[in-house]
Image (cartoon, rainbow, N blue to C red; front, side, top):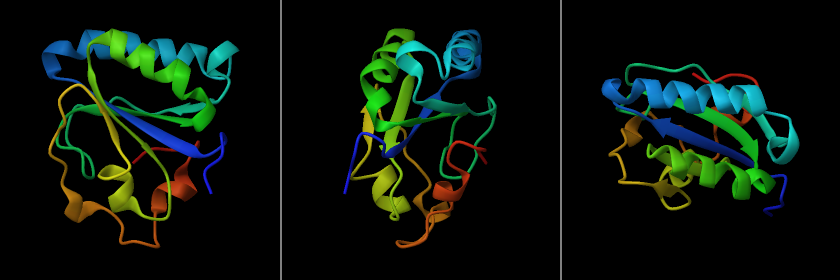
Length: 131
């Protein structure tokens, strides 16, 4: 059952030429997490200038609760960067495909690296660490 406390990830993608824009957004989320309308933003991961897991482009993660969606989505959209936003359930593949929401053009993910249904290691890492 989904509640407003359901865990979510946003993967914000950037090209190396857009790294300064990504750094600004990363810093903004890092500085504002846990404050005001970003109270439910719990973690901002490292900027990864290479592919990691299913993500074929440089990216960073933002971990938050569902009730932060109305605050998180417009900030990402305003940056002009593309992002994959998804819930964390026990189905990692569905999280990254059928349950996912894209901001900007989708990126083809490497689905072979995702956990099988019923096992999602992202749940244990939620709010604590990225890859």
